[in-house]
Image: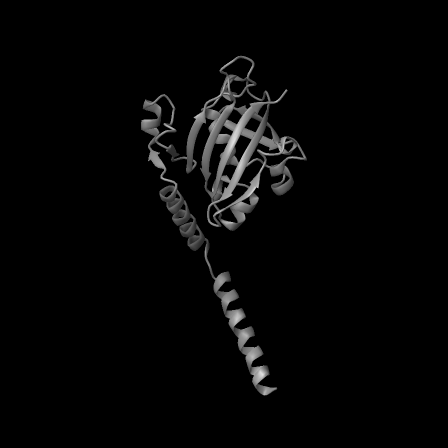
Length: 213
């Protein structure tokens, strides 16, 4: 009985030590872990990172065959434009005029190495966001309560999702050859949803943007 009691105490002390070590992880430690996870992901996926200067020289295009992603310094986003899409740009709209955009995505948790959410399979699981700009500032919120992102993280749109809107067109294909915008982005926690921000987690997204009817 005494040995059993000592064993239980030892297990409890060990568990408390592990928890205390985990709780002792600082924000700086988490950011370093995030940077390392992103770097490892870039390496394992054979991503070729180009500068903004090179991106602009190429007409704001990324070479998908070379698996190019542009690193956008201001936001910390890595972005690949698979298809710029058809239609209009958000910047071409007057200030405060809202654009309703249907988004379908695959969300990949980079640190955990697994898909954490997707809305590209079931057609009714899409998210719709209402987005507008006021000068250079963009604002958006998810409006489809049945959407995957809305149901998981709430109405707030991750800031990182808005970054591609500076470079793509949003519309609905009506002619042969027209397509919807399709991007891939690596989103650090500072540009992510509430879970990403609170847990300091980076995510990779594949997202399509289509003008809502």
